Image (cartoon, rainbow, N blue to C red):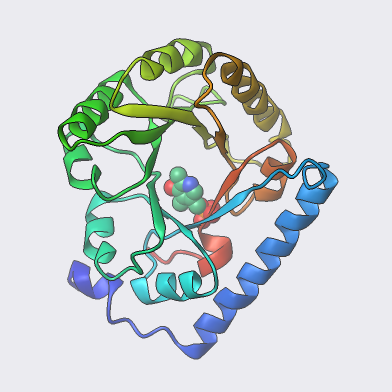
Amino acid sequence: MTEKSLFSGSEASNYELKVIEDNLKRIKEKISLAMDKAGRKDRGDKVRLMAVTKTVPYEKVNYAVSLGIDLLGENRVQEFLSKNEFYDKKTEVHFIGGLQSNKVKYIIDKVKMIHSVDSIKLVDEINKRALSSGRVMDILIEVNIGNEESKGGFKSIDVDEAADYCAGLEGVKLRGFMTIPPIDVNGSNGRYFRQMQRIFADCRTRHSSIDTLSMGMSGDYEQAVLYGSNIVRIGSALFGNRKY
Ligand SMILES: *Cc1c(COP(=O)(O)O)cnc(C)c1O
């Protein structure tokens, strides 16, 4: 199969579309319950639902958009570029995947925010490219909250320094933090989300541009909402399990 045929022209059956609709309804209900439980509704607090599109054909993505999804999360530069032209243009797109510095130039004018800023080298490149295209890129610092060797992102002890550094750059606007906590084996990820909530609150007092906490995926978004997440990034719970 060519790459193009993976992401386009694959007919999404009515059945598959109905499943997406049902999934979306259930996810929204669960988010709503968690918002209630956390007392966040009373405070007029909001959470955005991002549809994570990796491996999902653009027809299904556009269907989700037709149901009201207004934020897409992209992981892979090549895949994004091959699908982007087929997306409904009014939809906001954020880049959330591991990003090599040499690929920044391909997405700099195509996304509103980059969630996966995991090194100074990367933010320097984003800053440079943003300045030369006459824009300011919204960014989130990726925090390796479990201090896992296998994962990218800043360790929690380095976050303050990274935030100060990013805040000093003119081509980027530091909006907050993103995290992918360790795989949750027994529903105990609350402590990681709580640590992120604290980092977010602390940094916010020093940088007024910070307003975004991106955490929670298919397996743990309700818990993330309890700890103040305001963007949940959901792939498989919406579109079904990824086959490749
Ligand atoms: C794939 C991915 C998601 C969504 O994962 P699901 O478990 O399918 O919801 C969220 N965030 C990032 C960074 C991802 O790569």
